[in-house]
Length: 111
Image 1 (cartoon, helix red, strand yellow):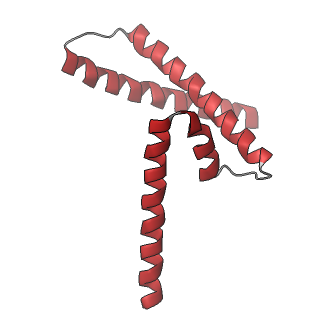
Image 2 (cartoon, rainbow, N blue to C red):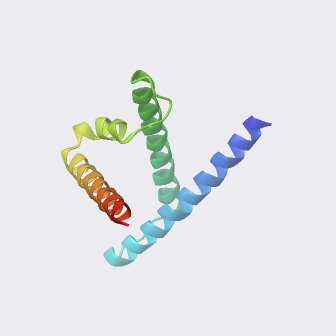
């Protein structure tokens, strides 16, 4: 039963991905004045789905190697280490989140 539930969830997630990819492709093709076939959208969705699967396996492996069951921000940063631009964006995002948490904690402690 669990296998069927996992398969159904995968199918729903893949359908949502296909829908989102289709919307983005439609918006971009309108801007560029070009057309994209449903086959292109399907192939792009399959490629993204495979990449998401690879990334999730890598993150799971990093967490396991560190002796954790849960993926952390450190694992994501380790994955992004070879893409300097992505690493910079993620590092900036983490710094903003850390600053926001610190500010919220400081405000709570003042009350």
